[in-house]
Image 1 (cartoon, rainbow, N blue to C red):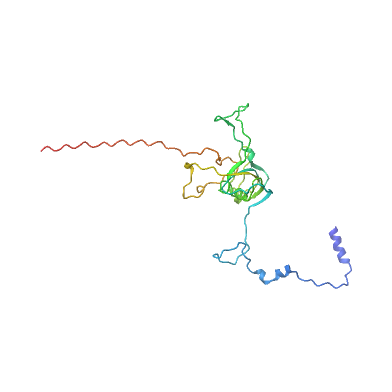
Image 2: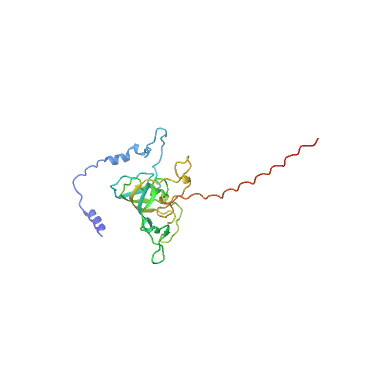
Length: 262
């Protein structure tokens, strides 16, 4: 009703005798009418001398990784190629379902090489510990790996990961106490960088080929907290030893030839 009343009053209001002031064009308005506005836009990436400039339409970005610092850490900045100790919680962005967190992964208590048993007959579990990942080596989903860049020890960060940098079109099925992740699911992670340490020295039997600078090709990304990643302090697994070859039976020498009787 107020809108209709305003329209009626505008029609019945007397016209002012003061001449209207001519409107002046603003720089923004003149820029839109400028013939140079229809020219090809400059590339948003600075091209090196060897790449030719081309006329193009506006650049499109299909997806992007985003993050915000909840708290900037007061410790040193983490270095790629180091072992990052993290606390984390992951949610599905579409419905807010928490599918994993660092404190859901507890290891059994071991004493004298044997698991300790509790009064209920089940193994005692240690307190949860932050996960340890070799940052920057592709051992977790790309969005999680790249979203840690620039964090300082003691810092907390929220990472928004598009599905293209998470699990893509692959669906993660439900597990006990861990809801699954549908295909093409965007993810949200809250992470806290607790500590950064050196990577453990690899066992000679587990060293990659000398001509390969990193992990073997085709190594699948491992989701943080699934327990599938090798533990940094775990004993290296040796390749299966084949049974020793049986020595070949000695070849029988042919009997010496008798000299012919003359």
